[in-house]
Length: 217
Length: 362
Image (cartoon, rainbow over all chains, first blue to last red):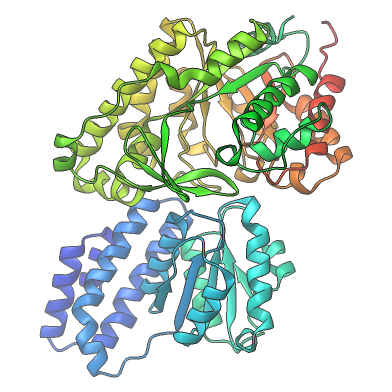
């Protein structure tokens, strides 16, 4: 299988070409999980690296994520029949009182591009809604976003509510957003902090291999 | 010197009698918290739209009062009266953009009336409405020329993405650049028309408020910024200068990869210089302090919220040392005085500017 013929359209943000490349690869006999794990997910990792070093920006990240999504749509039936298991389920949302969306959307896309099932609760999400969704979807990670300094208290109280529940001992909690810092994340009891969407995806991948309670950033 | 003279001297890269003091923006909570040191009868902190008419007038009067009492040299005004309530949680402006109200600050754009070229064909933008300049009119009447009058004008990028949606904007950088240029030209036409009104209303300083960057990088590539955003903002700068105004460029975030382009646009000032975004005063002053006045960068995210008045005073002294030499510096917050800032810290910032900002040969 020529991996670069699948990776490059994703990196280039070309949804049509990415879907076509995947279709051709499957027609040539490639396994869906192989395509996902060895071409598509590494393509998004490359995109994340390019974003981190300032070569790619939000539009390029967005286009690549859409190309990844188009490719995964082609793969999905085969992934199901192969019994593919996602890397985990992430419940994500912007905390109560915060209406900002774009940063969280990028994180959602990057998480999907890393092989996670993502349940995006949107913005202004009360703590109880995170808890309920995590229980309903058997989440392994809860991701909280805050874009305002004044909504950091809501992030802190959400973490408290989650940790106080029985679920809180069995889930990783990660946080991010412009005013969030690593120190703040530690102080409120989160398992990790990421400064941007690719970093959040990398953190989630790392935590998904660790038992709960050990994955400190 | 009057506050207006002080501000205009600094924006001309001159050295006034002391470092000017300016507030980029201030929410209801800090107005009330600071105002309680000056006057009685203020309501409990709540958003302007939740106040009755008497409370609204008291809040506005207190806003003016704190500028007078603490010697703030410039007054920031912006559009009011251009929004209608959709429901308790949402408002809509005269462009048809729907915003979700936030208890923690400004409303957030959520509903976008134009999503495609076809939508744009059928869309009619608003005309600038003179009545929306009420806050500027009130400031002009209250301060009588003593303070510089600033106006926050949404720039090309912000008006464009609010109209068509952020993700939609990003996608169309590649999918339909012609569409984006059409939107930008429409925005430019509106802004230029409003500029004429603002000048007639007595404006001194136009602030092109056009947030384009995150903490580490710009939101879009510099090449896209140079093509889709700054040429239109540059036309605003040129026209504003023709009309006798000074112009300040506002954007949060790390602007280093865009800075040369912004400098070429001819702005007189750059604000707010977020310390968390590598926009430290010493570094920026060293790079371009001979070309542009710096406005900033007292940290409103951490220091003004969680610091002590002594720490604020120390930060002001350092800021003046780093950027005030020779003039060309205006002290202000690194973004808005938002609902989370400590009012006592804000007062400390005001007073420290007076304490440390006098030029030795003034």
